Image 1 (tube, helix red, strand yellow):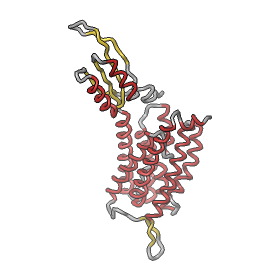
Image 2 (image 1 turned 30 degrees about the horizontal axis):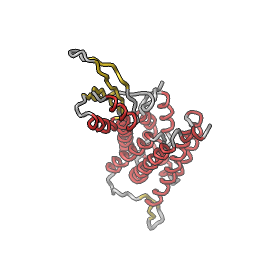
Image 3 (image 1 turned 180 degrees about the vertical axis):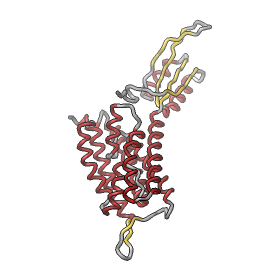
Image 4 (image 1 turned 180 degrees about the horizontal axis):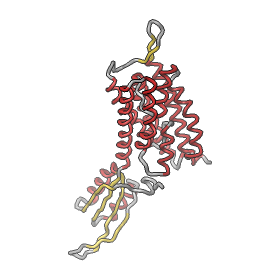
Length: 302
């Protein structure tokens, strides 16, 4: 194992990824600790187990989160790469510390010495479920897109997703069903279990929505008399590959190069701006593609 195996090919990309993971960690922690934990909402995963243990024993959720993840991280050493493992350890430590910090800030002590978590939305349990699950899903998706993990069942899901093309949201959904169902036997409260399943559904679907939106790709077909300038600009300014195809007009029989470009959807605006600047009369066709695999895009899985 070398330093490059851990940090990757570019230190700038590493900094970007870690800032993104830090942002995702903050969003996830706020969603879980502020909205789900005080209302006894078990949304699944290690955080759900931490919620159950906290209300059964009073043991801080952040500490439970860390202890459980130690064992799962040891398992991940044999399944996942070092780069992923290092990122997961960092995110797990950050989340564990952040949960403990926020939980201590929300803890209130009554006159008789009883401790409880502040309900910032009052008795609006449904709203707490929606907001908390939304923030959890957004935080998880942000971390996943940076190549990290929050630990827990995310490790298992990411390990499976590494080798098989199954959506992370669906995997987490299946792994969390049992944990949420178990909460019924703890509190004997059907409402708590149903709200937990709602939180799981919202979080899992939002994960898929954010990740799929970020990975969506488009295909450009461009016919222009300035094809060389366009290809050079796309290749150097946007760092995207360009394939030159041989085309021929059916009526005119005129041979003309055709540019084929595959790019992320968020890059399409930059491509259009380049084309308009170089050749406003260019013929351009853009279409969404179901999936693009290879360098610069997604990895082909078994």
